[in-house]
Structures are given as structure tokens and as C-alpha cells.
Length: 335
Image 1 (spheres, helix red, strand yellow):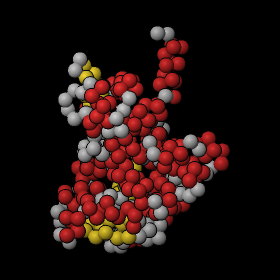
Image 2 (spheres, rainbow, N blue to C red):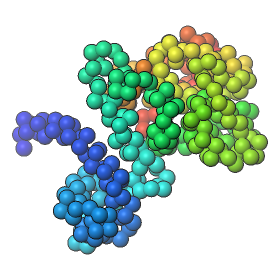
Image 3 (cartoon, one colour):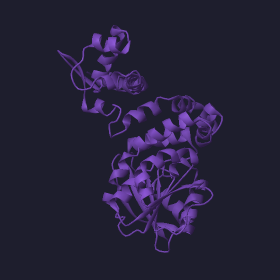
Image 4 (cartoon, rainbow, N blue to C red):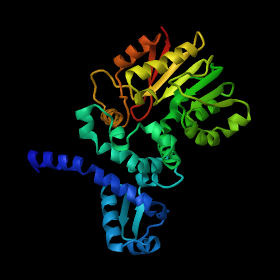
């Protein structure tokens, strides 16, 4: 294969990526993935069980085999380790993320990318006529889909207590804490610490379930509120996990100032984001940067850009810690 053909194949691979993603999501939605529960299954039996056309299902499975979601042998198809992560109940939660990424919430917004680049408006606003959080307030089914997908995308938080010691913190506030997965992990690992989760009313239902044991034990409070207006006061640690990248510099600075004003004198703010290294190009972080441009007024930011935001809020970077999937923890202290 010559260089021209290699370059052409790579471009076609990139351009057909959305087709692969749609194929994966279709296999999830139609029950194909969940029906493959260990033993090899042949296409006619699988099609009959799910009410699908066997010839067309066979073509879909052939593609999924080529991209590593399933494997084929003489007995039929089975899920690979990658495909297993798409099954319902798998601890990765990636099934929920596949369904969210394939939903109209995201797909319709991404279709407006050219207009976003021309106008400076978000693709989500152009597609849906409002911002994502306002829309979710009035659409509980979409809010549930969004919360589940966000929880799945936040599995890296399980590693947070391994890189940052919460043992000395009396109170940790998870600002915009979503489903409560992060705070649950922190409280499990720091038994003498109390937690507070601040969220919008529509997002608190999942958190009530996830944090029920800690709430019952008197170690956790769930607070309805708007972090653009205020955050609970007096805590030792404020965690902003995948919050600031949703907001403009002005709003991100406002959130940080609320944390600075509320925190204990020796407190810390943990900014958990894909903090871009200055001068480096981590592709996954850059994909999410464009996604933020499509979905919100925010962005993935460099270390220098975060330091500017922190300085303007009376904080400064103490250190930066690494997490999986290009996530980082920017530990900020009072300036």
C-alpha cells in the first residue's frame, strides 16, 4: 500500500467514524448486546429471538466484528472484552454513554457545528433553542438519559482518592456532583469525612439513590441549588468535577469565587477536568474541547488558562495530579 492509499484510507476511516458509532448504539438499543450472554450465538437464532432480519443483522455483526466489539468463530458470535462493556449492568456504564452520544440531544447539536463556527452560538442552542441544562429541567426522560451518561463518563472518579488524600478533610462539598458517584467514592475511602452534594433538582434523584446509605448514616447532605449563585459554606475541600468546562470564563470565574469565599481558611478546591498541557495535543481532550463548543459556552482549558481563572478568584495552583482517560486534578489553594 503506497502513501497516497494509506492517507486516503485513514481519511475515510475518520469520516465513517459516526457510522460505526451508530452501529454500536443500534446493537445496544435492539438488545443484540444483552442477548449475547456468554455462549456463542448464530445469526439466525439471534435474529429470531429479537425479531430482526437475519441477513441484515449478519451484516451488522460482521462490521462489529471488524471493529472489535464481537468476535466470530465456527459456532457463532460472542462479545469481546470491549463489547462486554456495553451490556446492561456492566460496572463501566458505557452502555449509557453510547445511548447518550447517539441521542438527539447530542447528534442534533453536532449537526450544527458549521453554524456554530460561523455564529459563535452553541450547536445545542441552535438545534434546541435553549441551553442543555434549561432543556433538561423540563424533560425528565432526557434528564435521566443525560445523568446516566454523565455518570458513566465519570467512572475515573474511583481513582480520585488514590491520588488525593481526603482523610484530613472534615467536610467535602461536591459542587454539581451529578449522580453522587464521586462523593460516594470519597466517603467510602474517608470514613471520618462528611459530604455535601450540591445539584439542580432534576439531577438529585440519582444522587439520592447512590448516596442513600451515607445520608441515612448522617454523613451526607443533599442540597438543591445553583452554583452560579452560591455554594455551601465552611468546607475543607470543594470538588468541581467536569463542571468548569461547561461554562464561559466569566461564569467559571464566578463559580470559583463562590468556592473561595465559602471555603475554610486552609481549604482546597479540586478542579477535575481534562486540563490541557501547554503546547501538547492529547487527542481525546481536544475532541471533548470541540464537544464543549458544540454543547455549551465552555471549553477544555490549558494549565495557564486555569491559573488565570484561579488567580482572578483568589486562588492559585498548588499541584496537578493525573487520572485515567487524560483527566487531571488541579489542586488549588488560597492565593
